[in-house]
Amino acid sequence: MTSAEATQADITEEIEKISAGYAGGESQTRLDYPPYRSSILRHPTKAPQQADPEGVELWSPVFGQRDVGELESDLTIQHRGEPQGERIVVSGRVLDGDGRPVRGQLVEVWQANAAGRYIHQRDQHPAPLDPNFTGMGRCLTDDDGYYRFTTIKPGPYPWRNHRNAWRPAHIHFSLFGTEFTQRMITQMYFPGDPLFALDPIYQAVVDPAARERLVATYDHDLTEPERWMGYRWDIVLTGPHRTQMEQLEQTEAEQ
Image (cartoon, rainbow, N blue to C red; front, side, top):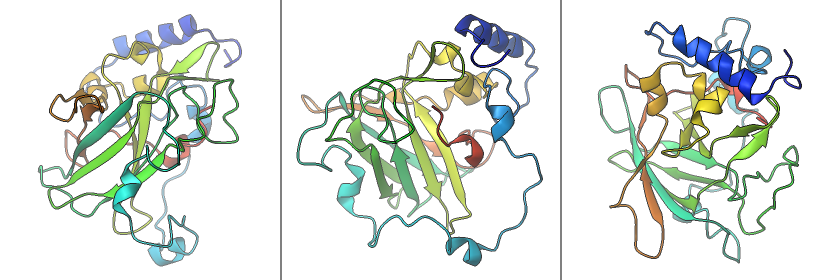
């Protein structure tokens, strides 16, 4: 059944059958996950090859002509006006598999606006753009491995996996190591989202405990009166409790 033919009921039935047959022991996101229709086309089909970091960096993205500035982590002050939506703070620690902080880690985020729309030419669904919100930011982790972003809570948005398909609200995270070849990408979700059970990208992490690690927790200590709601989300890079990461081929243009 193609994406155009499939309904949410069809996708949900497929998700439930896969979940019922899950025997445990998987530590990675499934690359071949039929409810996520385009995953079959996007995931790698050949073994990875060693890349020369110096050669790759000649063709790598350029993130600016200066060092990371403190204000780049606040996505609400990048324009002259106030962005629309619920203001939030997202903070947490980047840790290795032994619980040690990863210091000086470049962390980037990108997200949809409060109406669920990206500033991207491929996102043309009829939701308003916010001229005061670009939806991109970056920071470096501190000596204790902490990152912190001030932003707007993103809205859910439609995508074309099947008829009436909607993605839960989420923020994309990208982490760089010491070279551009050391990049990890993941998504952070918000607690209690009713779309979790319906979303094949979220459900492609078939282990329930691993899925739960993708969901932030509300943190009242991060919340400030009359300013913003606070969410805490730690990112574990290795080990049995690591945060699930995406394949780079699956991060482009979910719409």
